[in-house]
Image (cartoon, rainbow, N blue to C red; front, side, top):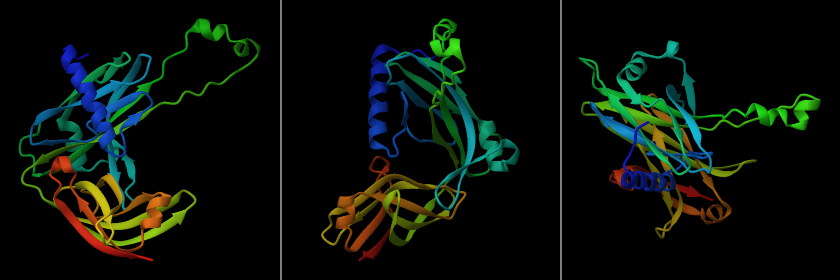
Length: 278
């Protein structure tokens, strides 16, 4: 386990909480909180991800690397190593991390170090893996099981939820650019509620990432969603922006929709369009 000085532990924990609140979707599941929610490493070098146990009991987490591909709906599909393409295999081979298993006391943060060892002659491009943090269920003591009346009279089944968080880790080499476009937008209603379905496009040599906002003719913000990405394996996708009743009521007439980098990444305008809602 990587031991951190007390002052730094407090600072890292505060940073993790801030990041989880500001980034959507929040990277918190069960009693585990992870910050940052995405890692970008340019060339070689390394980075750190901080895990925090926000529960009231010790917890153990297993850390692993996975391959996932985005599809045109914005969902992710797991990729077996046997089915990985050359870029995905290269990403798995050059990314190192430690530790691979941690046990955290309540309120305790833990830094996971990530390092990159690019192979000689690595072509310019964007390489990505997904880092998974999965809770390891604690085993019930034998004594507790034996004292359970249900165990003495028959068979009982206890379902224990296993929580996990996955974040992307990017390695970028060379001068890479990514451009985005916004297309048609429409309101869709379903049993799960109402949302805007927005066509998005991407071109260039890297993924794009940011937030989508919609403002009415008076410049008042009607909706906003952070953490919208188009990864390099797709050139178009549909984004779904959930709407509550108040937002739905305000969504009338012409609305300017913008896709920007997050403010902490510079806030540059990536794309914009205008939609008219009845």
